[in-house]
View 1 (cartoon, rainbow, N blue to C red):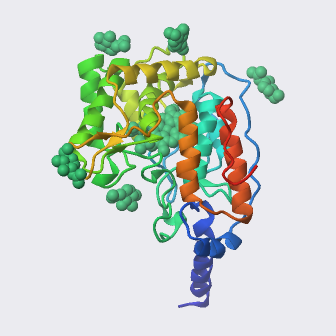
View 2 (tube, rainbow, N blue to C red):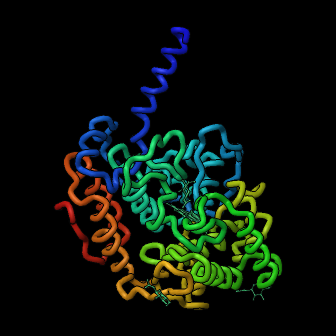
Length: 374
Ligand code: HEM
Ligand SMILES: *[C@@H]1O[C@H](CO)[C@@H](O)[C@H](O)[C@H]1NC(C)=O
Ligand SMILES: *[C@@H]1O[C@H](CO)[C@@H](O)[C@H](O)[C@H]1NC(C)=O
Ligand SMILES: *[C@@H]1O[C@H](CO)[C@@H](O)[C@H](O)[C@H]1NC(C)=O
Ligand SMILES: *[C@@H]1O[C@H](CO)[C@@H](O)[C@H](O)[C@H]1NC(C)=O
Ligand SMILES: *[C@@H]1O[C@H](CO)[C@@H](O)[C@H](O)[C@H]1NC(C)=O
């Protein structure tokens, strides 16, 4: 080994040792592991949420300042076609390593999502899948940047983390049980095309969204012994079926009809059509709410899970229903966050408190919970 390559490999090792935990979730780590990792992190104080954009107009977003660019080695993409597309057009950092503030700004600017929905998604994801000490998270899978796996039950893969956000019954992604759980799945996309042809004359519309959402749930119950639809996944499956009707349809049209060609661009290629205009931000929250409710109402399914064998779906009466926002908030804080972080100390505790406080913003009217003190 030359002196140069020796120094180079030392440098790479050093980068890995330091880089490894910076974007990895600290949820589920033991007190001992935290003691070891925390001093090596670049701790930052989480900034307050950026707030609502004052620019809600329908607007060209696939513009000169935001061209599509293919992935470079090391760039990360994940289970969310919305965030993937924002990264591939430069609304988010193209490497896929992001902060909640960047997400909240990017989904407003690039897609016209309203600030409250953006905050709920961004802070809940940060709290579970992000590194709350460095204030960074990955929009995707485990990558060389996320380093070696920590011992279980630590959370490894950014947004791919199973059972909290990433979950079963995705429209174009396979259930966790069947392996690769974040990549675009061509077979599932053929089913998307079949349903769009059968129920929507070649478009993904509300009828297609309702039928396909139900189909994916039934497929899960019939084929996946571990199939689960519990909070918060139970509500995100309906919202995610509605998002394409609102955000992937050109805002000048806004007719809730997504062509199969444009859908393939977003879901597979993380790419906006040429000349794509985002939707009207002042109407998008209502549109999402209306579509979500209609998709659920077409085939109401109760939250529940299989018991380890297929076709054994049992309803879980403790999971809050779709419209029980305060129940969702409470379940998230009291069950999910507290079990991931039973006894946080120091900067970890401070940053959890800050993120929980930002997360509560959109739940104004519910009772705020303070598991780590006020
Ligand atoms: C605001 C922050 C957002 C976060 C943190 C987020 C996160 C996620 C995650 C974790 C999933 C995977 C769930 C799963 O299917 O297992 C997902 C799916 C999805 N997201 Fe997002 N998302 C965000 C915003 C958006 C936006 C703005 C759009 C649309 C423009 C979008 C569209 C979708 C769609 C369509 C799916 C379902 C994919 C499928 O079922 O195949 N998301 N998102
Ligand atoms: C939004 O606010 C910024 C900064 O205050 C301002 O420059 C911009 O013109 C405003 N845009 C609209 C559409 O009001
Ligand atoms: C889910 O995807 C991740 C990332 O590709 C992979 O490491 C993991 O093994 C997958 N899960 C299963 C059950 O195969
Ligand atoms: C979806 O498209 C089909 C075929 O054109 C149509 O029959 C159906 O009414 C549409 N659904 C909605 C909700 O508009
Ligand atoms: C949502 O539904 C309500 C009640 O039916 C209706 O008044 C409103 O116009 C709808 N909004 C959108 C954006 O679809
Ligand atoms: C799971 O449910 C099936 C069907 O309802 C039942 O036959 C089986 O005994 C249950 N298994 C367990 C482990 O509870």
